[in-house]
Length: 270
Image (cartoon, rainbow, N blue to C red; front, side):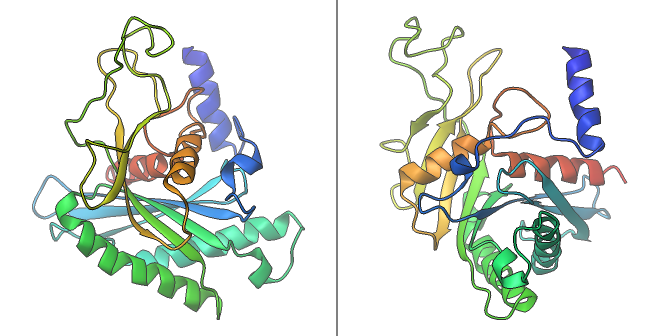
């Protein structure tokens, strides 16, 4: 197992792909392509340190290849990414270049994705409004500056695991309702009764917990210009949890969000 994990990581660093999912699983119901983004911010432990911001974007229609952009910004106790427009513009450039190399389309307008889905990590409920108000306009501005008239449909969602909510099967000893550790089966969704009374949110347990009780991820959709149904967004989010290239099983959060978190942790070392 150790050698297999090491081989997967080496393959990634050499530019390879360990696993892919069918394209139709990562497209919208109407067949439109999607640029998946993940973003995170990590703060320093010392007062004189700087915060690290990272934005990760998918490059292909199978969301198997991702490009990472990051920078440092002054620590201000807030979660917003100040220069997110610059990072988005760089990701769009890389996306178009990768699509152009495939040779299917030539002009920039046809290369650009018609839809963007952002999975934002590290935002508490008290900062939802602020982060959306500051980051969403900059994402739209970056698209407009990159290509005149480019106005993709955008869905902006926050993914969090810093909560104390747990979900349990009614019959933990029934293998049709629970795994061998007594947790809910992978892919379990709860979007009623324990969710927020006004926000569009849900809990998704997309991973298997080897020990203890599994902690589901909490998704909150703050903005949806694509007009996905809640079931469609849940299915898409769950699918992205199977596309993390460093493991052969599903993870607890979508792959782009996981990559953004890892990028912040690595950049923080330098």
